[in-house]
Image (cartoon, rainbow, N blue to C red; front, top):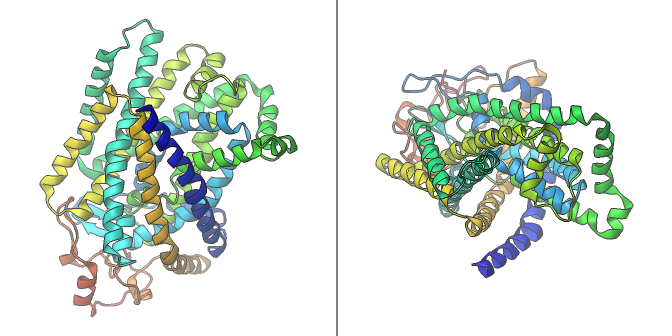
Length: 516
């Protein structure tokens, strides 16, 4: 097993460092230039549109709001990696890795905009709202069936099963650490109890469908962010004199002459970029599955909101971890990355902070379980029309959560990294040709903003687009196109469009994909 794990680590390092990261950076730079720096230029607009109200679904309930879709994606991307992953980046790349993590998230914001705008454009109707993601825009926009199926299978297995096992393992580990510090038993029995509790909580949410997931995420994501930020602010406030040194270390580590001569700058760049990409997931194809659920009046609106999610993850949550660690000033040669954040908090705030961090880790990991589960649900709906298979899938997720609570998962995690790399490659190969459509939507959105309008979109504006089925008229989808079961796969949209070529054109005042 150690030999296999070493081999997988080597494969991951080569694949991610020499192929996937360069591919993602090059495409993200192209998207940045082509979009006119959309990720910064429209930053104020992101905060405006996240407050938009949703429409009404075919079953009479409320559709998923823009903020709820944001919360679902944040629930998945803001996980234990924001604490452990950042610590690892700093340990391996030094303080300079933090700067490159910030820079990577800025560039990747353009990729997040493109993929989530496309997910909105090519989403499909369900009885409770909308569903979509890379599998959908690959199938219906790129018109490539095998790539869409490959993506759907890989993301379902990787996020909903494997990554959820890892998140459960992180929860069990954090609880065990707290229990040990209190003198309580922290062995296998405790792990089983944690696993059963986590299974019960997860089941109570995921069997309630996407609306319940969105409601829980909407409540927990801001809560965990506020708690963690307050801890970080407390650390900084108690060490305010160290703040100039910390900022100086970050920039010196990123650009300092000594670091370049010693080769440390290369490690800082590599670790910062890699951990930043792992953390915010921009361009990997996961967040668009959540972004597609939002009920908005223009596809670019949710593209902007999901871009804001990248900044929330990296510029806010990851930065808090980085400042906690660098204020503490760990020994970069002897301390293990997973322990750095805990020791940093304890050294400043005392033993109680260890238990506070356990609560935060629980919220981070639990919300990630919910977000990761929904990515699988969305893609299983793309693959399979039988609702009973969705029930089997939910039980499989619960089993993965329990096993993750009681079993070591090092090899599984490294296998998942490879699978996620495959998923990201498929997504990026699709984004390259489809990005031109996202930029057309951005131009239409910007034009309406300049005219003082709240941007609206209907397919009549771009009748040449193929495979689009939720923007043809107010109501979001033609009545017979509505997928009445959450788990059912939609019919081919090309057939639906062919049957309804005589649909009436709508002016910019229609609500497009909302269905108000």
